Structures are given as structure tokens and as C-alpha cells.
Length: 93
Image (cartoon, one colour):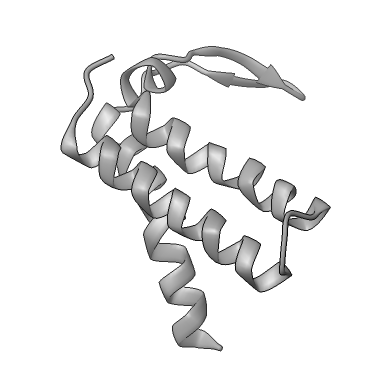
């Protein structure tokens, strides 16, 4: 795994979210831990797009993935979940 500026930036953004959650909750609580666990999904999509994009096979309930997903699309979805979705939800509220 190559460390890139994008991966470091995503880690900084996720750490900022974690610090903001801790200050909002006035300490570490179960909700903060759950929020940090949720942050692992976009971090994984950004950090390992090639590996996750290569996944093919059975996915449950009769579903089957028969083609690989481009790494660019996997990383884009990670960035959307990490940075785009919170901004979109803020603007819509």
C-alpha cells in the first residue's frame, strides 16, 4: 500500500470528525465509538480501492458480482461518504 497525499488527507479529515464528536459528547462515549467505527468504511474505500474493487463472487441472497469495479469509482464513493455526504446533509438541514 502506497501512502499518498489523498490517503493522508482522508485520515486527517476522519481524525477531525472524531475530535469533533468527542468535544460534542464532552468525552468518549459509546456514541463516539460507534461514530468512529462508521468512519472506517470511507477510510477503507479510499485506502484500498484496488483490493475492494477486485471483489467478485457471491454476495448473499442470490446476488453475484461478475465484474470488477474500477478503483477510481471505489475511491470516489469513499470521498463522497467522508466529505460529500456530511456537507450535503448540512446544506439540506
